[in-house]
Length: 157
Image (cartoon, rainbow, N blue to C red; front, top):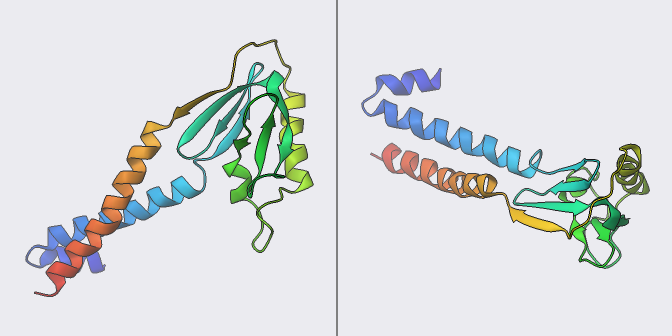
C-alpha cells in the first residue's frame, strides 16, 4: 500500500524501484548466507559448494570431518589441505562453539559418502570460483548501499 502511494507522487517510480532493489538485495543476501552452501556425493567425487568456491574432491582422499586445527568444520583430506565446510557452520545451534562440529554432523557427511556406491577415481582436488555467486554478492552490496542512499537523498527534498 505504501508503494502504491509512492507511485502517485512525483518521481514515485524511483521510490518503488529503489525499494524493490533494496528488498531484492536482502533476498540475495539471505541466499548467500544460507542455501548457497552444500555438500553432494557422487560415485567418484565429493562436491563441496561453499558460497564463493566449489571444491571437487576425489572420494578416495576423504578421511573425515574435523576442526582440530581450524575454528570451523573442515573435510579432512589425505595429502591435501582440509576443505572448509560452510554448510555445517550455518546449521550449528546458537551459542555452540563454532570450532567443533557435532559428532552427528561428522557422521552424517561420512554416512553420505558410505551410502553412495563409489567408483575408482584418480586425480587431485580441484577448486574453482563460483563466479555467479561472486557477481551476486557484488550486486547485492551495491544494491544494499545504493537504494537507501537514493531514498534518503530524495526524501529530504
